[in-house]
Structures are given as structure tokens and as C-alpha cells.
Image (cartoon, rainbow, N blue to C red; front, side, top):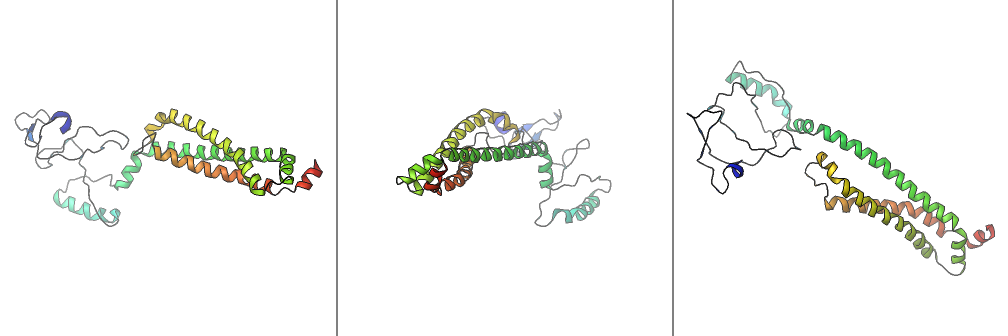
Length: 238
């Protein structure tokens, strides 16, 4: 608010007319950080804090915030008792912890994100099963080729690298296409994120490394089976 209404000035000491009360302007005595009063996903708006005892807030809801090192729920009765000692007519309701308030603020977004995460886990599992199936089918169809390679001197590690290399090509294509689609759709997910940019580089790199590692493990089983092929058995079968 200070940057918007008092650019390049020191706002402390200036006057504000509150609620059209020209006879009693409020003096600015300090500037505090921005606060997201409406919801965590909304940007902070210009805001002013007024002294409770200097302004009649009869038409407004009053919020009392208390910091404690113990369980907040254990202090509710004591706080209510002290408030009624000050004003016996005060109505106390909606006693919540900040954790509860924060959870309620992002509840719709959290539900949607959990739903998307669930779908993404299922899709990822299907992709990994697909990679495993494709590599297994490839190994099965190339058993004679692999047997010939081993018969003429190829070592098991060479066969292992050959199969993993084929699997890595599939993984690389998937990463390129998937990253491109994710970047294109990132802005649609921006409304459900808080504290993280839709195109956060660390997230993209971390997910790419995770999927590459898991996919390579899915390729390792067929590769290991291919490395154990007995050349004579495979050639005799063919």
C-alpha cells in the first residue's frame, strides 16, 4: 500500500481519511509486510491496520491472534475467560488454529492437486509397464541376434548395455515430449500452486531424474534376462 499510494516517499507521519471521517484523519505510524488476508493463492492487496481502541469497529468482525508454544486448543477456555473479563457481552466463535485456517484456504486447490497426483501416478505406472513390455518384447524377438553376438565373443555387459541403450532411447523421447507438454500446460496449473512457479526448473529436473531412474530400472530386468541367454540354447531353438 505504501509503494502504491506513497511512491518514493516516507509514508510515516502522513494522514489517511478512514471511512470518510475528515475530522479525524488517521496518522501512519509504521509500515508492515504484505499479508494475504483473503486466501493464500491470492495476491496481497493494499491494506491498513487501525487501532482497535481508537476506532469504533462495531460493524466489523474482530480477530484475535495468539502465539503459543503449547497446543493452541488448550488455551481456548483461558482466552475466552480473559476476553469476557474485558467485555462480558463479547461473542466468541470460530476458534481455529492458523494451520486449520491455512488448510481451509487452499482446500479446493489441494483436492484438485491430490486428484491430479493420483491420475499422474496411475499414468506413470502404466508408462513404466509399457516400457518394460516393449523392451521385453524386443529382447524376445532379438534372442537369435543376441545369441549370435554372444557366440562370437560379446560379453554379458555388452548385451546389457545394448538393451539398456535401446530402452534409454525410448525414455529420452518420452522426456522430451513430456517436458514440452508439461511446459505448455504449466500455466493452467498455476492457479493450484502456492510458493512454487509453474515452470520451476528444480521441479522439472527432479521429476526428469526420477522418471529416468525408474524407467531404467524397468529396462534392467529384460536386459539382465537377455544377458543370461545361453547362445547354444537360443540357436538350437531358432
